[in-house]
Length: 257
Image (tube, rainbow, N blue to C red; front, side, top):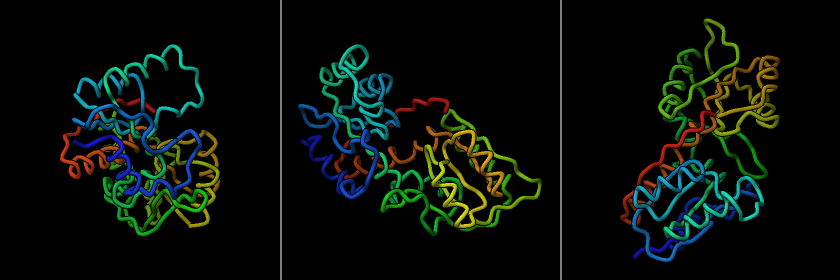
């Protein structure tokens, strides 16, 4: 008889959520509880009508997401928002969200898992946010085009693809860094240049980041916001499943971005 509060408290401690700064709308933790014990866990990158419906179809009543219920900001409880909340309550579906705490976790986090997925071994941190680091970095010696092939293969399994800045025919990657999601920013580009990173792997970034990267001799691989953040929620749901002896499933709902 495992309750949503029990699982959420364990996950909060595991991810060190209370000590990780985040964006105000993230509201990490249990965002809406349920009435009964948890029967099954579902995991998804985004909270949406589609993921709610698929979680209910899967028989889950505890939904783990990376981008939670309040990501767009304060909204009136009308229209779609009202229907979503009604569906959660009527189907006794609890929602647990973890953003940066899940991004940065050393074994369950999106960044560490993406590095392993594409055959890179992290040896350092990257992407400072207040007093914590979110991403990972390391050294290798591989043809950059070969690394792109690995990243593309991963992205395509989640309905995406990879775009890159210009790559020379014989270019090699020696110093790399990863920051999943919206990982290409003014801060991460400055940090990459300071650390002498030659290849930066992110989910997405603004157009100007490609221009800036060329100016600084930095290659950026944009692997998709959605695809690069599929690993963490799966790892967390799998861990909770093993800990509490509950079935779990992953809800694939790619955005194309």
